Length: 149
Image 1 (cartoon, rainbow, N blue to C red):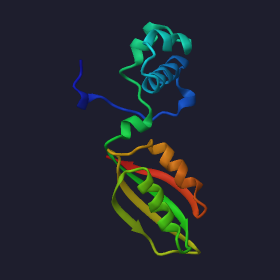
Image 2: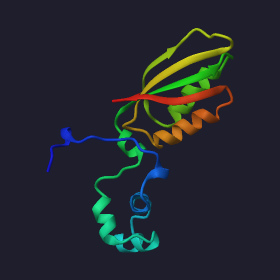
Image 3: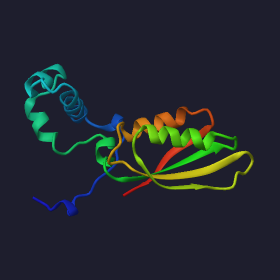
Protein backbone atom coordinates (compact mmCIF):
# COMPACT_ATOMS: atom_id res chain seq x y z
CA UNK A 1 0.00 0.00 0.00
CA UNK A 2 1.27 3.49 -0.85
CA UNK A 3 2.15 5.99 1.84
CA UNK A 4 -0.46 8.74 2.06
CA UNK A 5 1.92 11.38 0.71
CA UNK A 6 2.00 9.51 -2.62
CA UNK A 7 -1.77 9.65 -3.15
CA UNK A 8 -3.33 12.13 -5.53
CA UNK A 9 -6.68 13.65 -4.60
CA UNK A 10 -9.26 15.22 -6.88
CA UNK A 11 -12.22 17.45 -6.21
CA UNK A 12 -15.01 16.00 -8.36
CA UNK A 13 -18.57 17.23 -8.82
CA UNK A 14 -21.11 14.76 -7.42
CA UNK A 15 -23.18 14.40 -10.58
CA UNK A 16 -20.36 12.62 -12.46
CA UNK A 17 -19.69 10.03 -9.75
CA UNK A 18 -20.87 6.43 -10.23
CA UNK A 19 -24.04 5.61 -8.31
CA UNK A 20 -22.23 3.14 -6.00
CA UNK A 21 -19.88 5.87 -4.76
CA UNK A 22 -22.75 8.32 -4.17
CA UNK A 23 -24.66 5.66 -2.25
CA UNK A 24 -21.56 4.83 -0.19
CA UNK A 25 -21.31 8.48 0.87
CA UNK A 26 -25.04 8.50 1.74
CA UNK A 27 -24.61 5.34 3.85
CA UNK A 28 -21.66 6.89 5.72
CA UNK A 29 -23.63 10.09 6.40
CA UNK A 30 -26.68 8.07 7.48
CA UNK A 31 -24.58 5.99 9.89
CA UNK A 32 -22.98 9.14 11.30
CA UNK A 33 -26.41 10.61 12.16
CA UNK A 34 -28.13 7.33 13.13
CA UNK A 35 -25.61 5.65 15.39
CA UNK A 36 -27.93 2.81 16.42
CA UNK A 37 -28.34 1.70 12.80
CA UNK A 38 -26.16 -1.19 11.60
CA UNK A 39 -24.21 -1.16 8.35
CA UNK A 40 -26.46 -3.94 7.03
CA UNK A 41 -29.57 -1.84 7.69
CA UNK A 42 -28.05 1.28 6.15
CA UNK A 43 -26.87 -0.39 2.93
CA UNK A 44 -30.26 -2.07 2.56
CA UNK A 45 -32.02 1.31 2.96
CA UNK A 46 -29.77 2.89 0.32
CA UNK A 47 -30.05 -0.12 -2.02
CA UNK A 48 -26.29 -0.72 -2.01
CA UNK A 49 -24.46 -4.03 -1.73
CA UNK A 50 -22.29 -4.56 1.33
CA UNK A 51 -19.32 -5.41 -0.90
CA UNK A 52 -19.62 -2.07 -2.75
CA UNK A 53 -19.87 -0.22 0.57
CA UNK A 54 -16.73 -1.89 1.94
CA UNK A 55 -14.91 -1.36 -1.36
CA UNK A 56 -15.37 2.43 -1.30
CA UNK A 57 -16.00 3.45 2.33
CA UNK A 58 -12.37 4.25 3.18
CA UNK A 59 -11.74 6.17 -0.03
CA UNK A 60 -14.62 8.63 -0.50
CA UNK A 61 -15.38 11.59 1.74
CA UNK A 62 -17.66 14.60 1.46
CA UNK A 63 -15.74 17.83 0.86
CA UNK A 64 -16.60 19.18 4.31
CA UNK A 65 -15.04 16.10 5.99
CA UNK A 66 -11.77 16.64 4.13
CA UNK A 67 -11.64 20.31 5.06
CA UNK A 68 -12.34 19.69 8.75
CA UNK A 69 -9.34 20.87 10.80
CA UNK A 70 -7.79 22.78 7.95
CA UNK A 71 -7.30 26.34 6.81
CA UNK A 72 -9.79 27.45 4.16
CA UNK A 73 -9.61 30.80 2.37
CA UNK A 74 -12.88 32.28 1.16
CA UNK A 75 -13.22 35.15 -1.31
CA UNK A 76 -16.33 37.35 -1.25
CA UNK A 77 -17.63 40.26 -3.31
CA UNK A 78 -19.56 42.51 -0.93
CA UNK A 79 -21.67 45.65 -1.34
CA UNK A 80 -20.01 48.72 0.15
CA UNK A 81 -22.62 49.43 2.83
CA UNK A 82 -22.22 49.86 6.59
CA UNK A 83 -22.64 46.59 8.49
CA UNK A 84 -21.99 44.18 5.61
CA UNK A 85 -18.61 42.99 6.90
CA UNK A 86 -20.11 42.66 10.38
CA UNK A 87 -22.82 40.31 9.02
CA UNK A 88 -20.15 38.17 7.36
CA UNK A 89 -18.09 37.98 10.53
CA UNK A 90 -21.18 37.08 12.57
CA UNK A 91 -22.00 34.22 10.18
CA UNK A 92 -18.43 32.95 10.45
CA UNK A 93 -18.49 33.28 14.26
CA UNK A 94 -21.78 31.36 14.47
CA UNK A 95 -20.10 28.42 12.73
CA UNK A 96 -17.49 28.38 15.53
CA UNK A 97 -14.42 28.53 13.32
CA UNK A 98 -11.38 30.66 14.01
CA UNK A 99 -10.70 33.62 11.75
CA UNK A 100 -7.00 33.72 10.90
CA UNK A 101 -6.93 36.64 8.45
CA UNK A 102 -9.32 39.20 7.00
CA UNK A 103 -8.42 41.34 4.00
CA UNK A 104 -10.72 43.93 2.48
CA UNK A 105 -9.87 45.87 -0.64
CA UNK A 106 -10.89 49.42 -1.35
CA UNK A 107 -14.44 49.41 -2.76
CA UNK A 108 -14.69 50.02 -6.49
CA UNK A 109 -18.06 50.86 -8.05
CA UNK A 110 -19.79 50.00 -4.76
CA UNK A 111 -18.29 46.50 -4.41
CA UNK A 112 -15.45 45.46 -2.09
CA UNK A 113 -13.37 42.31 -2.35
CA UNK A 114 -13.00 40.51 0.97
CA UNK A 115 -10.93 37.43 1.69
CA UNK A 116 -11.13 35.52 4.94
CA UNK A 117 -8.94 32.62 6.04
CA UNK A 118 -10.53 30.37 8.64
CA UNK A 119 -9.37 27.40 10.69
CA UNK A 120 -12.08 24.74 10.52
CA UNK A 121 -11.15 22.40 13.37
CA UNK A 122 -13.88 23.55 15.77
CA UNK A 123 -16.57 24.27 13.15
CA UNK A 124 -20.07 23.19 14.11
CA UNK A 125 -21.32 23.12 10.49
CA UNK A 126 -19.85 21.95 7.19
CA UNK A 127 -17.79 24.39 5.13
CA UNK A 128 -20.29 24.17 2.26
CA UNK A 129 -23.08 25.13 4.70
CA UNK A 130 -21.08 28.19 5.76
CA UNK A 131 -20.65 29.11 2.09
CA UNK A 132 -24.43 28.87 1.60
CA UNK A 133 -25.04 31.06 4.66
CA UNK A 134 -22.63 33.67 3.35
CA UNK A 135 -24.27 33.58 -0.10
CA UNK A 136 -27.65 34.19 1.55
CA UNK A 137 -26.51 37.45 3.18
CA UNK A 138 -28.16 40.44 1.50
CA UNK A 139 -24.95 42.35 0.75
CA UNK A 140 -22.90 39.43 -0.53
CA UNK A 141 -22.74 39.15 -4.32
CA UNK A 142 -20.30 36.24 -4.78
CA UNK A 143 -18.61 33.64 -2.54
CA UNK A 144 -15.98 31.08 -3.48
CA UNK A 145 -13.32 28.97 -1.84
CA UNK A 146 -9.99 30.07 -3.27
CA UNK A 147 -7.63 27.94 -1.23
CA UNK A 148 -7.16 25.36 1.46
CA UNK A 149 -4.20 23.97 3.35
